[in-house]
Length: 237
Ligand SMILES: [Zn+2]
Image 1 (cartoon, rainbow, N blue to C red):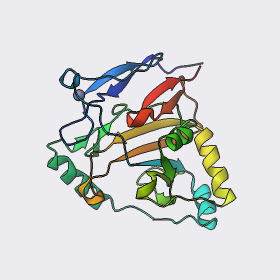
Image 2: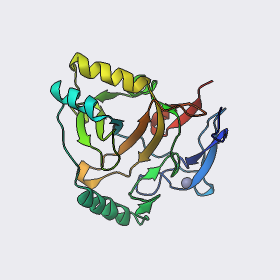
Image 3: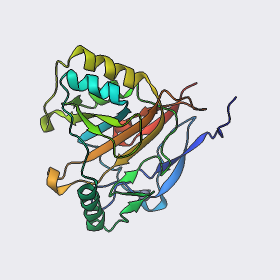
Image 4: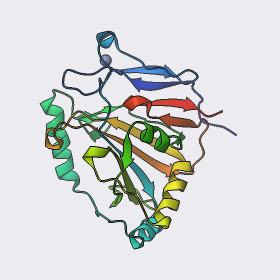
């Protein structure tokens, strides 16, 4: 029995570029049956927001998986320093004259699919799409999640334009197998952030894909598409 309300539209941020090379924060809707970009009235004649140099895909995983990945040689960065991260994001937002508080978090970027993000996301097409766009997997890391129990670790997979990072060529088979199952899974929650260029990263742009709730079923499942860095969704029928 499906109790979740089914909607064939989805909140979506304007694809227009801001004056500082970020993505507009104005929200509209896309039609999931024929997803095309949405643009706010101010950006009808503007360029599209520039694509990312790096995408950090962050999968929420159980502690046991994290332990096995650590044994296989993946570095664990431990618990991030939330206070200094928030201070940095707040300063970045203020630099560009943006509100720093977005949907209960401190951020300088744009939530591409709105404050509630995506329910029922699949990431299975992403590795191929990112490869075609010239982005390559660099060294993965583990970190402790800042909240939540059970699935309290995060596997971070950075995909970067090749000149900006070190491509990994031979990951341990255990890590490959875990990655395959993560990209095949359905994720109950997904949040995609398009961040502005960062001075401390030589003005390079990072996007973040955060997914959690592995394997939970939802009413409507959607493929997350890279779409040249603008991101889109396709209904899985
Ligand atoms: Zn706009």
